[in-house]
Amino acid sequence: MSRARQVYALGGGVEAARRAGLSVTRVQTAVLAVSGTTAAVGGLFLASRLTSVGQNSGTGVLLLNAIAAAVIGGASLFGGQGTTWNAVLGILVIQSISSGMAITDTPAAIQFIITGGVLFAAVVIDAPARRSQEAHRRA
Image (cartoon, rainbow, N blue to C red; front, top):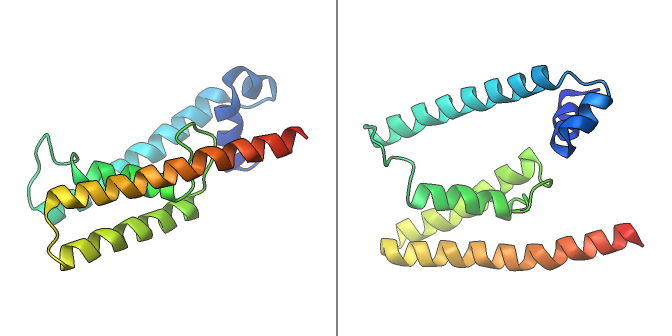
């Protein structure tokens, strides 16, 4: 079984994954190691971009953009959905919007409002789409 399938199986239920023969501790350790490594690399990129580090470095616009990129990329706020490439596509969309607003010298408050509106629209579109997919699966 591939690593991605093991992670998906573990996300579906720890006891079910254990009964399927997966080494739950090994998969969890691997996921946490990869997550920690990518977080460290992201922290290095952020520190080099800001040329400083503080407790509030990852808050504000950065956090909102990360959540919006994941949701626009197809990750459900309710879990269990999404792929890496869709998340990258979401990042490109959100960053294009942010770059466009920076070029036009849009005030920070308006940037929050527009990004929040895009996020709200993605969630509003996502919820009925998920419901209809589940209804079709049951039928």
